[in-house]
Image (cartoon, rainbow, N blue to C red; front, side, top):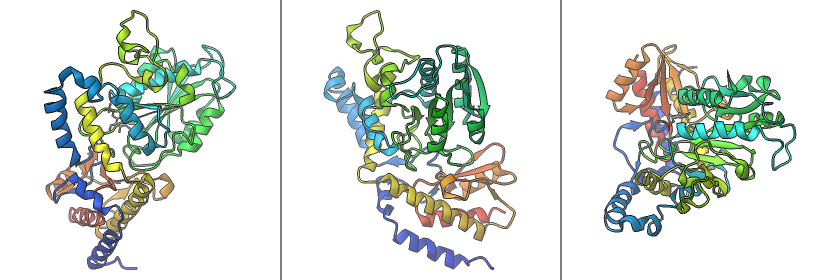
Length: 412
Ligand SMILES: Cc1ncc(COP(=O)(O)O)c(C=O)c1O
């Protein structure tokens, strides 16, 4: 069967754009006529952000100065913004705090998880947690974004555990009564593969271990269901699909039932039950607040808060539906426009296994991406030979997808 003509593909893109319920959201972002497919690395700027940052700097800081810690809600921003992210990842309020980088939150989560696992039983009656010393292994996704692996290795060393890198597929077979904690990525940063969070979490719980998920590549792109699936701890960044801006603060989720026993390895004055008591002894704050550390990075945090307003009337299910339609259409367009054999997709075709990006392997990929960017199609390159294209349903349209694939076809 011959490939559909360029005209047919363009017509299909127009039709899909015409029926796209989320199409109007693009106007809420600062974009130009480049096709921006790198929102899985740095989300685009929401229009609400510059004015908010200006107000925070000029009025809240410039005029109100120290009063803003109370009057502008600076002090409570980490938990308030955590509660704004919560519905996007399927969490009830009171379980997420925003602050620090993902890397730092991975550290809190892995050490905190090993400490939780070392205790007997848990608040929900999960049996089979032996006493201290019984659980001495941390499993980490062997294909992980490197920072998670580096930090898990250090956290394992600090807690006297052995780190075992395994692929997510190997996790069920690697679990045992020795497993303390397992750190996994919901979506793989390189291939865009979506891992089975419900089933892996339940296997991890079956041996009495603690499940930690890195949501960097799924939060804001697809439903996560943290509460529904009983995830113990989760971390994620906010500068990708949540559009918080370069280096915007990350977040830490601690399941409510575990909060009383969550023992952060970074107890700062902000996680103290009485931060202004200035006592020499540490008493952890109740709830998720104990995930805080030091003074929050207010400028970035309030830029993120403004960015999250884009989500006010948006359902994550609608975002997921469009995300899958975008990646399906991209794969279809690549098939039509790119000469056979020039690229190979490493992103699963099954919807149940696909995040919101498509990764294509090709020869000389770094150079191909440079030329693509020169032609106004922005994705990114990951070693050794991967072209990554991220699809942010809030602002990417089907016409963008068609153009990206067409220009890609012209590279070969
Ligand atoms: C899966 C994953 N974890 C962690 C990070 C980075 O963490 P940090 O916010 O500390 O730079 C990234 C960055 O792209 C990532 O993709």
